[in-house]
Length: 214
Image 1 (cartoon, one colour):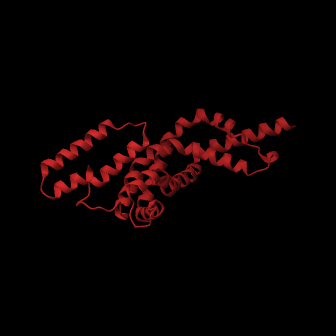
Image 2 (image 1 turned 90 degrees about the horizontal axis):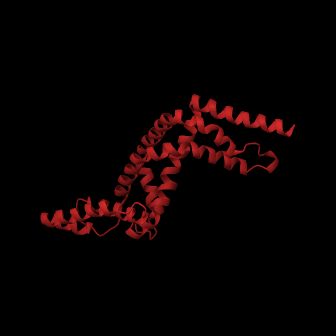
Image 3 (image 1 turned 60 degrees about the vertical axis):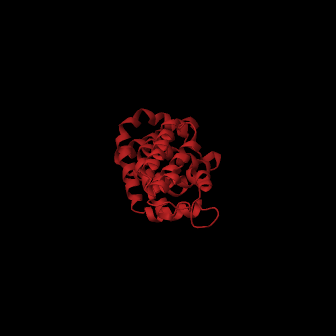
């Protein structure tokens, strides 16, 4: 459909191109938000629809870069909500590397202690998320090249539709989102207000643990 729209437009068949665009808009309204594959297909259709001229190849590195930039513009709101939880996941992971007798931090208890204090750090988390994603936008060309390498399963230098639908979510998580999360968690711990409360909660747990052992 999207290829037909581009072809029709390039040949001057504006009425036909407009019709195909209307069909794409109808698909947007009808997309099932609970079906990730349907959403990915719509993204694919939209990218091809906005090509200047019709072509048979899949996505090239410039189109992948536009996809990366679009994702980084939308990602801060999701990242902000997940920054604190990712910090606790990292603590949990670190505890997992220790022998049982050295695991002094109960992450579930730590989270419960921190929950009443988290609301006042939401603005801070959102600002950090935006800063991280804005910084990553300056490296969009590098990120796009890595994304292309990961998703180009047949090695032809393009990302075909099958590869796109199969790999995009995982590839974005590995090559883009993980970078933002890692940088964001580190920055969150540098924020004095949050860091003081986090370290105090950890200290309270350690003291409570020592009292129980005594």
